[in-house]
Image 1 (cartoon, rainbow, N blue to C red):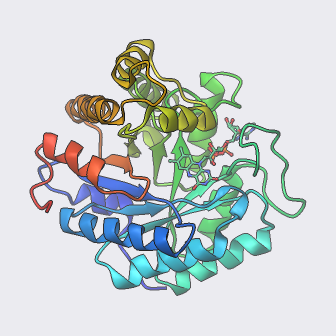
Image 2 (cartoon, rainbow, N blue to C red; image 1 turned 180 degrees about the horizontal axis):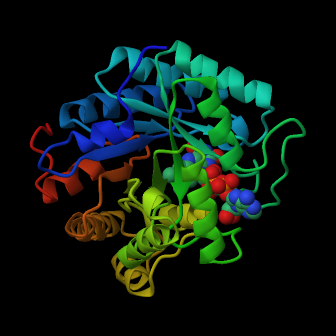
Length: 307
Ligand SMILES: Cc1cc2nc3c(=O)[nH]c(=O)nc-3n(C[C@H](O)[C@H](O)[C@H](O)COP(=O)(O)OP(=O)(O)OC[C@H]3O[C@@H](n4cnc5c(N)ncnc54)[C@H](O)[C@@H]3O)c2cc1C
């Protein structure tokens, strides 16, 4: 396997200013792929510490995800992180996926359990020859060789966890199993992120020293933001809901320009507070568009290379 920098090394080497990173999704067709590559080239000029590529629910986009993530590794200057989910896969298939990533020079993997296909909030059913929890997949990937592994964390707690203590315990287990960092679910209340960080430190100081990278979603449409929140089980704080609803107006169509303006302001405010609280990196959901993230980075004075 070609050795690439780990995410922890890469964000640690960022120097004086906070690094940022971005999340892409596998494109659905040729037009979407062309759009993704426009965003990729634009981000290349802005110098993200790394870029991550999600894995379609239930492994539905497996071949395309591997191909496009491999192309990012081979045809750009970016450092890709491949999301890998356990849902719907046997252990043999999961091993084969890791092999396919290694063949394309990818050694950074974000290990996830994934949600059931169809209804993401439906019952979780383990593949008969698969793994039950992300923690088991962390071990499997680590045992396969020289991979650097990250995992998911949840500032508001995972919706299936009985309470925040259990949620913290399971996150710490994933870190102890060999994960080097976590990336959070998107959130809109920085205090939730700070409390998660404190809980992990209180539970296990050694694991608490590992970076918790906050994920930020700049809202550009209230309707799609509500849908993403519903799927992820996260909440929009009431004061923010009010601000966005006011911007959307009460016409039949939401006022997209006004919502977008507020969404960029909100993401900027969130990022400013995270920077002042010492977050290790800012990870942006891009939906394969560069503009909203570039605007937030410009507001933060972090887009000096942006076109
Ligand atoms: C940054 C990020 C990126 C994501 N990317 C993708 C993606 O690309 N594709 C996709 O399909 N989904 C993605 N997801 C969603 C994720 O797959 C779901 O949120 C999933 O429900 C949980 O995944 P996990 O890896 O945290 O699972 P786990 O860590 O296995 O946790 C699943 C549930 O089981 C509980 N649990 C864990 N261990 C134990 C245990 N030992 N005993 C009892 N309960 C336990 C946890 O508290 C949690 O409720 C992403 C989420 C995040 C935050």
